[in-house]
Image 1 (tube, one colour):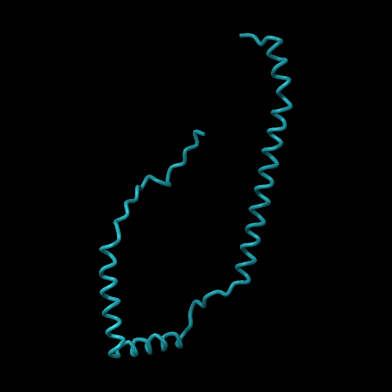
Image 2 (spheres, rainbow, N blue to C red):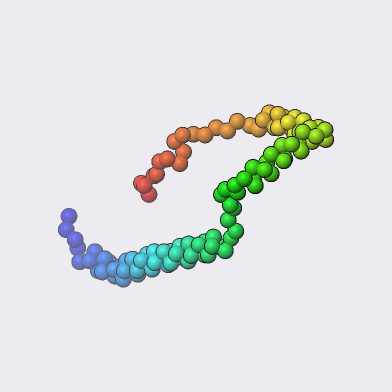
Amino acid sequence: MAIQPIDLQTIFSQLDKVGRTQAALREGQQIQASLQQIETQKKLETDVQSVNEAQNMGEEANKIKEENKQNSNSGEDRFEGKQEDEETEAAPEKKLPLFRDPSIGRNIDISG
């Protein structure tokens, strides 16, 4: 099957459109990369400005926890604790079991 001159005319007239499309794709990739870089920079700035939680408070934290345990042994706290226990026991009955398909999110369809 040979290429006819009319086919060549059609192909050559469409070449400029192909070139524009390729240039637009390259520009789009560059813009996307720069936007991602800007977003990463903003995230780093917010991380630097934010207050981080202390990892280890030491003996003071343990003292506070012990004081809270001792205070929870009073009469009012025990009554409130029983109500919370009853609420937490009733909560699992209300929750519906979740079904997760192991194949979802693991395969990538590259066929287009």
